[in-house]
Image (cartoon, one colour):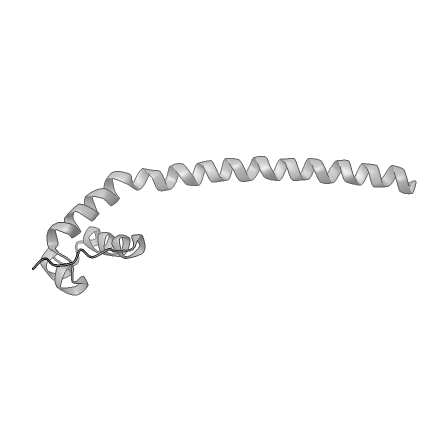
Length: 90
């Protein structure tokens, strides 16, 4: 009676939405290619466009965290080297 609801991976949704953004094919053509309703493709495309800034926000946050972590490690290694130099008499 009822058709089971399909669950799509984020990777699949992203590929379909990117294909829609490219505008090489119509939504109807993409729907046939990916076996997804055209309205669903339109919604995924809207979501991708609306949230694209999150990709760059996380990239900046990751860079800041990496730099902070890197500086902390450099400080630890420097302190360790100074300690070893004192202990070893160098």
